[in-house]
Image (cartoon, rainbow, N blue to C red; front, side, top):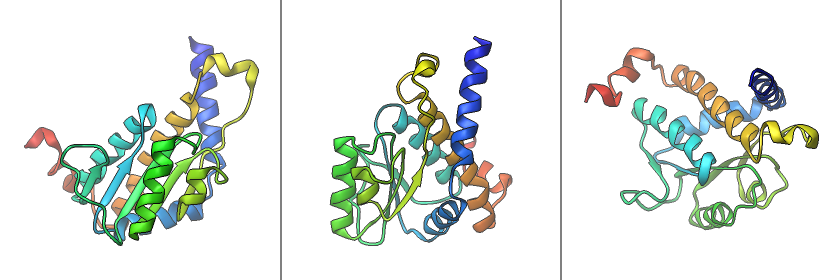
Length: 179
Protein backbone atom coordinates (compact mmCIF):
# COMPACT_ATOMS: atom_id res chain seq x y z
CA UNK A 1 0.00 0.00 0.00
CA UNK A 2 2.79 2.46 0.84
CA UNK A 3 4.54 1.81 -2.49
CA UNK A 4 1.31 2.48 -4.34
CA UNK A 5 0.65 5.67 -2.38
CA UNK A 6 4.16 6.99 -3.04
CA UNK A 7 3.86 6.11 -6.73
CA UNK A 8 0.49 7.87 -7.09
CA UNK A 9 1.59 11.00 -5.24
CA UNK A 10 4.84 11.20 -7.24
CA UNK A 11 3.01 10.81 -10.56
CA UNK A 12 0.40 13.43 -9.62
CA UNK A 13 3.24 15.83 -8.69
CA UNK A 14 5.10 15.13 -11.97
CA UNK A 15 1.91 15.64 -13.96
CA UNK A 16 1.21 19.00 -12.29
CA UNK A 17 4.83 20.15 -12.71
CA UNK A 18 4.29 20.02 -16.50
CA UNK A 19 1.37 22.49 -16.38
CA UNK A 20 1.79 25.78 -18.22
CA UNK A 21 1.24 28.46 -15.57
CA UNK A 22 0.24 31.05 -18.19
CA UNK A 23 -2.76 28.84 -18.97
CA UNK A 24 -3.64 28.74 -15.27
CA UNK A 25 -3.54 32.56 -15.15
CA UNK A 26 -5.79 32.72 -18.21
CA UNK A 27 -8.24 30.32 -16.54
CA UNK A 28 -8.35 32.43 -13.37
CA UNK A 29 -9.07 35.60 -15.37
CA UNK A 30 -11.76 33.84 -17.40
CA UNK A 31 -13.43 32.41 -14.30
CA UNK A 32 -13.40 35.83 -12.62
CA UNK A 33 -15.05 37.49 -15.64
CA UNK A 34 -17.72 34.88 -16.39
CA UNK A 35 -21.38 35.69 -15.72
CA UNK A 36 -22.23 31.97 -15.39
CA UNK A 37 -19.94 28.98 -15.05
CA UNK A 38 -20.98 25.51 -16.15
CA UNK A 39 -18.92 22.46 -15.25
CA UNK A 40 -19.07 19.09 -16.97
CA UNK A 41 -17.38 15.75 -16.60
CA UNK A 42 -18.45 12.15 -16.35
CA UNK A 43 -17.39 9.49 -13.88
CA UNK A 44 -14.50 10.40 -11.61
CA UNK A 45 -13.65 13.44 -13.76
CA UNK A 46 -17.17 14.66 -13.03
CA UNK A 47 -16.60 14.17 -9.31
CA UNK A 48 -13.49 16.36 -9.51
CA UNK A 49 -15.60 18.94 -11.36
CA UNK A 50 -18.34 18.82 -8.73
CA UNK A 51 -15.80 19.42 -5.96
CA UNK A 52 -14.51 22.44 -7.92
CA UNK A 53 -18.08 23.68 -8.37
CA UNK A 54 -18.61 23.61 -4.60
CA UNK A 55 -15.62 25.89 -4.02
CA UNK A 56 -16.73 28.28 -6.75
CA UNK A 57 -20.21 28.47 -5.19
CA UNK A 58 -18.57 29.21 -1.84
CA UNK A 59 -16.95 32.19 -3.55
CA UNK A 60 -20.40 33.41 -4.53
CA UNK A 61 -20.02 32.64 -8.23
CA UNK A 62 -22.95 31.58 -10.41
CA UNK A 63 -22.06 27.91 -10.98
CA UNK A 64 -23.98 24.95 -12.41
CA UNK A 65 -23.09 21.34 -13.13
CA UNK A 66 -24.23 20.28 -16.59
CA UNK A 67 -26.80 17.52 -16.32
CA UNK A 68 -28.34 18.59 -13.01
CA UNK A 69 -32.06 19.09 -13.32
CA UNK A 70 -31.81 22.74 -12.26
CA UNK A 71 -29.07 23.68 -14.75
CA UNK A 72 -30.11 26.71 -16.82
CA UNK A 73 -29.37 27.14 -20.51
CA UNK A 74 -25.87 28.18 -21.59
CA UNK A 75 -25.74 31.60 -23.25
CA UNK A 76 -23.21 33.66 -25.17
CA UNK A 77 -20.35 34.74 -22.91
CA UNK A 78 -20.88 32.01 -20.33
CA UNK A 79 -18.04 29.68 -19.41
CA UNK A 80 -18.24 25.90 -19.80
CA UNK A 81 -15.47 24.01 -18.00
CA UNK A 82 -15.09 20.39 -19.18
CA UNK A 83 -12.91 17.68 -17.65
CA UNK A 84 -11.97 14.58 -19.68
CA UNK A 85 -8.78 12.55 -19.51
CA UNK A 86 -8.83 11.30 -23.09
CA UNK A 87 -10.58 14.34 -24.49
CA UNK A 88 -12.50 11.90 -26.67
CA UNK A 89 -15.51 11.23 -24.42
CA UNK A 90 -18.40 11.74 -26.82
CA UNK A 91 -20.67 13.65 -24.45
CA UNK A 92 -17.83 16.00 -23.44
CA UNK A 93 -16.88 16.70 -27.06
CA UNK A 94 -20.52 17.22 -28.06
CA UNK A 95 -21.07 19.58 -25.14
CA UNK A 96 -18.01 21.63 -26.16
CA UNK A 97 -19.10 21.83 -29.78
CA UNK A 98 -22.68 22.83 -28.94
CA UNK A 99 -21.78 25.55 -26.44
CA UNK A 100 -19.06 26.99 -28.71
CA UNK A 101 -21.71 27.43 -31.44
CA UNK A 102 -23.82 29.32 -28.88
CA UNK A 103 -20.88 31.62 -28.15
CA UNK A 104 -19.79 30.28 -24.77
CA UNK A 105 -16.14 30.00 -23.77
CA UNK A 106 -14.90 26.43 -23.32
CA UNK A 107 -12.09 25.56 -20.95
CA UNK A 108 -11.01 21.96 -20.83
CA UNK A 109 -8.76 19.93 -18.63
CA UNK A 110 -7.59 16.98 -20.66
CA UNK A 111 -4.64 14.70 -21.24
CA UNK A 112 -4.17 15.95 -24.81
CA UNK A 113 -4.52 19.34 -26.46
CA UNK A 114 -4.81 17.45 -29.77
CA UNK A 115 -7.88 15.54 -28.64
CA UNK A 116 -11.33 16.37 -30.03
CA UNK A 117 -12.13 18.18 -26.79
CA UNK A 118 -8.84 20.07 -26.85
CA UNK A 119 -9.48 21.22 -30.40
CA UNK A 120 -13.04 22.30 -29.49
CA UNK A 121 -11.83 24.36 -26.51
CA UNK A 122 -10.82 28.00 -26.23
CA UNK A 123 -8.40 27.24 -23.40
CA UNK A 124 -6.82 23.86 -22.66
CA UNK A 125 -5.12 22.88 -19.43
CA UNK A 126 -3.19 19.81 -20.44
CA UNK A 127 -2.37 17.22 -17.79
CA UNK A 128 0.11 14.87 -19.43
CA UNK A 129 0.55 11.69 -17.47
CA UNK A 130 3.62 9.50 -17.57
CA UNK A 131 3.04 6.41 -19.71
CA UNK A 132 4.63 3.62 -17.67
CA UNK A 133 2.73 0.48 -18.65
CA UNK A 134 4.64 -1.55 -16.05
CA UNK A 135 3.13 0.52 -13.24
CA UNK A 136 -0.39 1.02 -14.64
CA UNK A 137 -1.78 -1.54 -12.21
CA UNK A 138 -0.71 0.73 -9.33
CA UNK A 139 -2.94 3.51 -10.69
CA UNK A 140 -5.42 2.01 -13.16
CA UNK A 141 -7.41 3.82 -15.80
CA UNK A 142 -7.44 7.57 -15.19
CA UNK A 143 -6.39 7.62 -11.53
CA UNK A 144 -3.42 9.96 -12.02
CA UNK A 145 -5.40 12.31 -14.30
CA UNK A 146 -8.38 12.45 -11.94
CA UNK A 147 -6.28 13.14 -8.86
CA UNK A 148 -4.10 15.66 -10.70
CA UNK A 149 -7.29 17.40 -11.92
CA UNK A 150 -8.61 17.60 -8.38
CA UNK A 151 -5.32 19.02 -7.08
CA UNK A 152 -5.04 21.48 -10.00
CA UNK A 153 -8.58 22.73 -9.52
CA UNK A 154 -8.03 23.13 -5.77
CA UNK A 155 -4.79 24.99 -6.57
CA UNK A 156 -6.71 27.44 -8.76
CA UNK A 157 -9.02 28.36 -5.87
CA UNK A 158 -6.51 30.47 -3.86
CA UNK A 159 -5.50 32.30 -7.07
CA UNK A 160 -9.14 33.05 -7.81
CA UNK A 161 -9.76 34.05 -4.19
CA UNK A 162 -6.94 36.57 -4.46
CA UNK A 163 -8.22 37.84 -7.82
CA UNK A 164 -11.74 38.30 -6.38
CA UNK A 165 -10.48 39.71 -3.06
CA UNK A 166 -11.94 36.86 -1.04
CA UNK A 167 -10.65 35.05 2.00
CA UNK A 168 -11.57 31.95 3.97
CA UNK A 169 -14.03 33.96 6.07
CA UNK A 170 -15.98 35.05 2.99
CA UNK A 171 -16.07 31.45 1.72
CA UNK A 172 -17.13 30.12 5.09
CA UNK A 173 -20.17 32.43 5.05
CA UNK A 174 -21.38 30.55 1.95
CA UNK A 175 -20.41 27.08 3.18
CA UNK A 176 -23.38 24.70 3.24
CA UNK A 177 -22.84 23.77 6.87
CA UNK A 178 -23.81 27.29 7.92
CA UNK A 179 -27.07 27.31 5.99
